[in-house]
Amino acid sequence: MISRVLSAELTEHAGQRVTIAGWVHRRRLLKSVSFLVIRDRAGLAQAVCHGGDLPGEESVVEVTGTVTANPRAPGGVELTGPELHVLSEPVEAPPFDLYRPVVPATLPTILDHAPVTLRHPALRAPLEISAASVAGFRAVLDRLGFTEVHTPKIVASATESGANVFGIDYFGRPAYLAQSPQFYKQAMVGVFERVYEVGPVFRAEPHDTVRHLAQYTSLDAELGFVRDHREVMAVLREAVAGMLESVRERAAAAVATLGLTLPEVPTEIPAVHFTEAQRMTGEDEPDLSPAQERWLSRWALTEHGSEFLFVTGYPMAKRPFYTHPDPARPGYSNGFDLLFRGLELVTGGQRLHRHRDYLRALAERGESAAPYEGYLQAFAYGMPPHGGFAIGLERWTARLTGAANIRQAAAFPRDLHRLSP
Image (cartoon, rainbow, N blue to C red; front, side, top):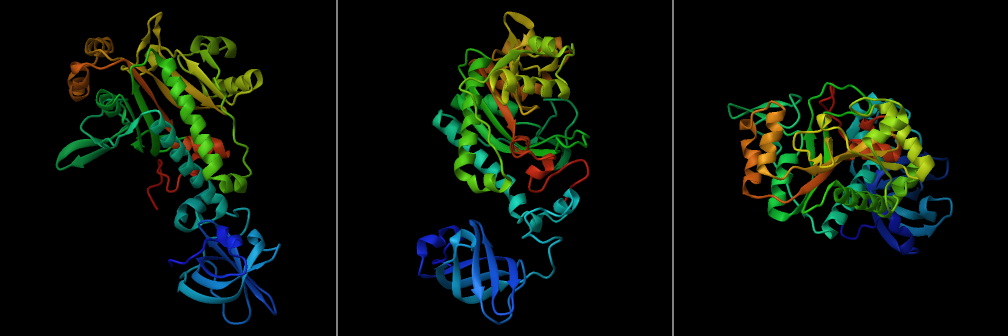
């Protein structure tokens, strides 16, 4: 396989005899000639065959042939005079023809057979976009002096956001799957100043909706020595712009497959305070409803030409205890959400950084500091003003691709009902 050529590289080898390898994407059997369309990680290639038994679709093959021009073939070239070697054959047919441009199956069928259905170009494309987004996220934060960290996903106490956690037996002791790396990434600000993590988080919330998963991938960042939440928002803007730039560069074929129009990120994303958002939408609730998020997104697009909108200053009562209040309006927070195409995409803000402020915040909420002893340890030894944010990767990908269901942006989604494959 050392001399293997990818399908996208064939035009560079016109007139040469080369070897490709991949899956039989489609067979077209005619009277005098047959065509095998081979799928590899880079795309499709066509081989012209004369006589003989041809392997079935999804067989894994190695084909050696001469690269010959044909404007009707994928990429404008095909392999002629092929020698065919079958590496493996399927024992059963896929649940639908993977060569059809439109997926003729329901979402449950797709998810039940994910190891094979994700081979379809249109179903694989969101995952390519997801991977490119992560690469862009990492590239931007690396450039800005962040250090990537890897924090525990098994924790001793369920302290961050209530009881919606998955309990496990940890060598005879109770433990939980982490809802977020929040506590650990804050602690690591005291080590590296700027950190980020890409990893799974777990939420045992009994949601059965098109926008929730029980396990998803979180893109987290935390940075020290900030003046307030606006500096965190500026870093988030750079991260989102870098993710989109990476998608354009690394997943152009996937974008084309899905026929997407990618958004532009304004140099400065428009922002409205929570109280102003409530005034504009005519509601007075402690949080934004989905309908309000959609209305505000339409307003941002109409008034500012932006598919992104920051909403800042959420009430402290709706934010975690570690959120820093607005010094000028203590009832409101130095926190924010980023809305994208009608949906909350990112939550972030400035955190408390003084040990005494944490003790006060917990006391005001009627909570004991004892369960937070490990977390509070970092603040007992001096921490700078800091803040951060978290992006749900599957939610980001679903909004970017226009998927009707967040499960279409996950390879093997976990939700209220699904635990396999």
